[in-house]
Length: 414
Image (tube, rainbow, N blue to C red):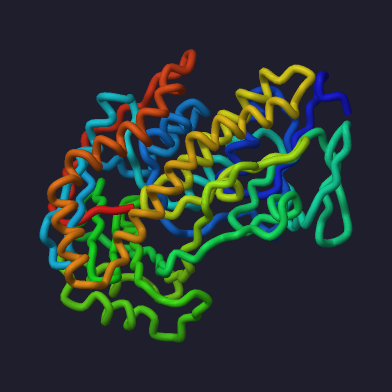
């Protein structure tokens, strides 16, 4: 296949948010795409996502921001507090609409996944297609599947996650590292006087945290984080265990847990990886968590996958007859962007996991002094402002949501 003439066929391993966003961005540039998803049914998990304004600007560029805002609450203030409910900081994220044209939102992962899927043109996603490796030559790439089959295209994008087969096939087993803490996630179908639309609260305790935010009318996403060993499994009664863990915590924490069906609670070890110097070889590259897993602590995982998709499509559109150089250019640009975010997310996670009473006091003093000033300024400059590169897309008017009621003072989070 000659990459200099169309159709230019790009293979994508992984049908998550990053893979679907890449497929859509490439379709919009005139590429032929095929997405291989190992699951038998294309769906994403039921957990919630925090999508900062830079991610919303990327979605707006793809023409999807208004669709997302039909469901997802726009946040006004991100609150941070101790487990007792003592305020540590409050970020006026609602102001981003005025400054950048898009809000910061919370949404169910499955909802965003579905919006991306439905925006694709044609049956480009193949389910039950588990990519286990690939071979490449000067003309293209052949992917190999677990069932013995194969397919061929001009390029391959590994968007198959932190444990992705594409990355491991290029560089050997990934050196992922366990953070030292575990996240329990759930959804509570509820209305609550202390959880108005646009709530985002993060509460810090001794070696544990609790975050909650509404992701749709009558639906609250939450996350309980605690130090522990990896590889554990929950026995029946996990909800009661979490209620005991958070007994006496301020705000609506107990009400949220009681309203959550136990079968909706998911457990996962939190892993990351140090920034890597190489993401690709030849006609193969990586995207999203496969390239730069970012722990949840700064709410940028999905945002960075969306950014990856747009930047990759830009580089390939300009590639002409040299797609390999375009992939290396994409990687260089995105490594510079994502490496600092990987590091800061890891550091915040370690700060949040301290158990020593003296270190907890130091953390609280640091947050009271710096969280509303230096930390918020750094987050806006280092995370949000980048999205302005897509804010003035030709013919695209940014959606401006109606003002939401401010969240009650308390907490906020990742």
